[in-house]
Length: 355
Image (cartoon, rainbow, N blue to C red; front, side, top):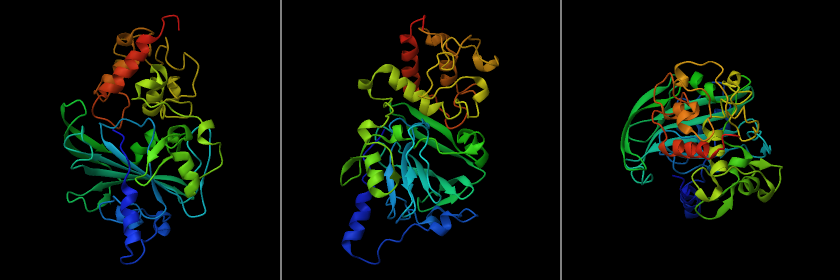
């Protein structure tokens, strides 16, 4: 579902036309204000009310393997204040400076086999790096698609679409409240970003006027400092690229969809099940590992991953569930991800019982 980002073309055309005043900059005073802005447009992150054309200094980005969110298309942007850049980190998220904004808009088209056709925005989430740490905010789009307003208490939205396999879907889409944001975006109790890690950004992106590796583009644009050249930097496999090998793709999928909680500093740290790419210990990866607290969530199964037997693996059982007391992840989806489940099941089936 990844697609070329042509959004910068609109900005270039606006600047080159010479019509009117130069594009206004991002409102850093609003970004850093103690009280969140009531409307997305108040930040000046976009030049248009529909949030299709980014302001100067706001750059689109994408992730090699993203989190599944009910087949929604996601449009991501990064802003860092002029003269301030994120510090490279080989492991974990980049170290972003105060004033940074990570923007993620969720959109659905009537037919997600053609995600750009008649797509409608449902919400835009902001992660803002303030002096005291990160703040998570959700803005819900109006019916006219002309503005998104702050919803700190979250919301439920009815969304209907045809999924990529051609099956009709009708879901109650969850806009998370601020406490729910902390459930996933937590490291030792602190709110942190999840996706923008060097290894998940180390891929080419079509910016509309040029194609460039994102780590190189971020350095050129002043968003990133330090670190090796892209060819020497770590890289996450693309979960949906069959040429990259079964195990790297499945591990990348589990990293993106599970490891934000299932890591030693995450909300599921007491489970002992750690699914990040950096983890190498078989037991912590779930192989022949009994759950810490057996119960309804285990489905009567004995271990998280039973090598060679996805049908006997708790991990697959919980990925396939839509029961709120069983499903994993607990938040962020109403549907099981059929393609992701198949990938993880194939990976488990490929494991030798002696693993």
